[in-house]
Length: 272
Image (spheres, rainbow, N blue to C red):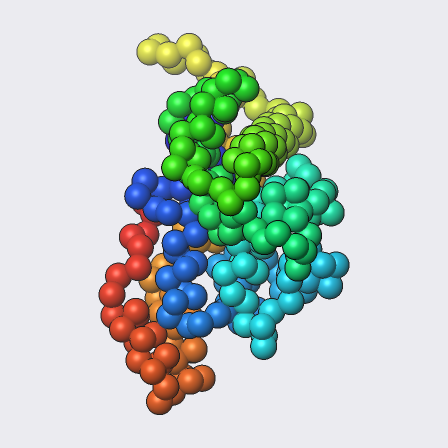
């Protein structure tokens, strides 16, 4: 699957760096602002506001609290965004019900969805290094990720293990699908614009087309903009803007002071 940070999976890559805790980046913003507005959620996910509102309308994401999206909302949005190209949205909702039961149901949750998202990020990061996508390889990764998990019910661990297996393979399938689409795009381009035969060079016997293909293989498949690409371009000034905007809304409050303190300390290093 290649470098875990560059090639592992849409909507997830930016959250699986070494030393990162997956949801921790978002949690820092939530701690500073007390909740994100719809426009701020769009800024950190790369999704359109209409898309998020549609998910809320269909019941796949809970309604915001006073127009503020909190941990449970954003974790669900991130999970849906990571799985939606391979799994139907209504089935993702069913998957979350399998893990924690229906929203508002009896029995309570066995794991917060932000923690489940952390598990997924951790598992994908380990897989990117291990390069083993066999069933036994994935099971070993999952067992390592949830090693310290202690659930409130006897079947909690088994349910999380099964859910993670499905989520991981959904992400892998999406990665493969995007790769094949990019390859097909290149083949169509080759057919529409056939390369002219290159003149023989004394020190090489490689055609121009071969060079182009080698360059393409090194650069990796081209895909449309994903959450991870959005966050790669999203430098510290964007984080400051969100927190400053919130500070202006609640000027004079203790929350504003906390936000200002957060602005003055580094958040995360820009990806190179």
